[in-house]
Image (tube, rainbow, N blue to C red; front, top):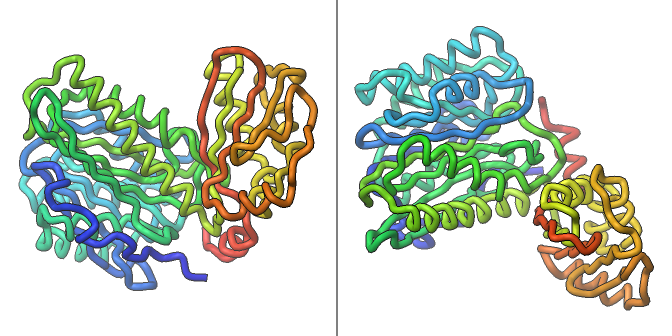
Length: 409
């Protein structure tokens, strides 16, 4: 079963003008992947930039996470180097040294300190990096650096592992009369569960932020996006989301313009997050779960997350089965209060459960609607409170089981 990136987005699909000022990109193949596909990505800034990071909550942490987490937030970052095909996780002191070696090599090439270089890795856990290949790859990537959309796409491809396609979003907005650009790339298809961001992502912008603003804004955006997705409920050892701000497009932001930028950043990360769920290994559908009527937003989030994680709910969506019992009972065992007599459920806009009781509906017609839509909306009302939350999760197919039974960990 092939699960390698495909060029579903070409240079003609994304305007070169969509890339923020101050960044150069490269993505090449250095031989870490048996497939021969791109597996080393390099992003270099024209001058020191602000950087923020959000990282995995897993207690088993990969060497690159340890390295980058110790360096962010910062106002002096110059580069991000990423390898795919090998997670450099559970590799002991050698893994720590290899991550540091990647940073030092990039620093030497661009003329900065290793503390100004961030590193990410993704792929197989517990295998030491083939550093001779990585070193050659960094040299090659450095020689290919350019601010073009083609290079941005190459870099986006090079961070992928089991992804079927690259995941990118660009946005151009106006802040205080100044044109600002944001460009994001992400990878993720398996080991996806919300506990920070179970994937890798780099967001670049030419807006002007200080490192405190960047860290706060990135945390908010992750909570509204990557923390609300799930494929298999498994939090990775390598999860990293980075935000780099060059400041080349704006002067200091006003409070209103910062709020606008926050909204745009939230939306961009939401788009990337949904692309990850849609690319869930073997997935046919994405469940767009909305919970309302809870006592608090936190309660609604817990209920939505519980419904999303249920294998019985996931397989019902795979089969186009409008099985209200699986969804309602999942809400019932969530660690948050509901009002059973006021609980209601809609699937694809059709009410099938109202005030604690199933109601008649055309099951065959609704099943066909579920099968026909890649995104299946589920609206669950659990009371009359103000609490609400949204959550996205993939379904569960035999293809997922087959792929992961063969995937080396």
